[in-house]
Length: 255
Length: 163
Image (cartoon, rainbow over all chains, first blue to last red; front, side):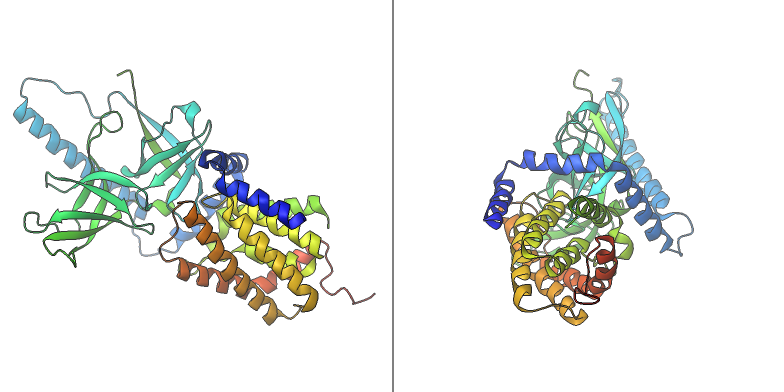
């Protein structure tokens, strides 16, 4: 009898609305924020100690590389605008945007989602992009009053419009549920994609004022069924596992 | 069973599983301390206590997992089955305890992945590798953690000694 009742409770949880279920996880992350963050920092420091060949910290190096890629992209955009719209002034890249620093409270079991210690009370909304080491690592998927769940670009349900390097074509980047993402349906004849090319999240009004780097091409091969298109595998430019702090881009609605 | 002590113990292990388990990960394979705990209570407690503790540990695993419900159901089901099995077959030797952890890990993990998939939640594409790796790693270290767990919970691992 006891078994039946407990099983019933389990099934109620299973078929309960996702938001209700998320509340339990968010509450746990909020209550035990300190031990969880200490644990994450400890894990991160242990992992960093396992990289003795780094001359400078790998995270710092990645951050600078990503910063460089972003600046180059912004510079290119600005140059185009100056050429096309000479005489008109454009607002700076982050004008009207608020950058909210948030701590990573915990990582989901599948390592494709993270929970932040900021929520609706801090201005977070669904769909807002999240930066790690100055690159897009994902978007806010669920928000409660004081915590938020971020769906990383590697999550199998994450679909983000992106463009590759200098090619002026937009494609959808979808996570593979592991540690990378896929970009498909890019014609192989027209676009000479190379390993190492930057992948940038496209400008999205209300969420992102300018294209920003998110990943780099890790593998590029022709589709088995249709060799005229690429099957592109990309990897995040930021080592997400090491992050204990991220930045959420909050675009001011009134602006 | 000392339930207050049990609650604190499960919370502590859940925090370790959520925040510190990466420290002991080998080639991205992490042990499942909650699975070890599940088998421990199924082996060393009476059936009613084992049923309650199995569901409670499953609930804790859900709280740090990707969805609520799958682990509670799978841990509850297989923890209960193991507790009933233990009525007929005493699982006292370490190799048998390891075997119990592997089998429970594979079965409960498989069911949890299936239920997670039913809820349209993301599941790792290499789930069989993850499942096998986690179960084997847990089975290797599990029996060694039974003794400190028994001491913390004030449970006698050899009930006939000294009686």
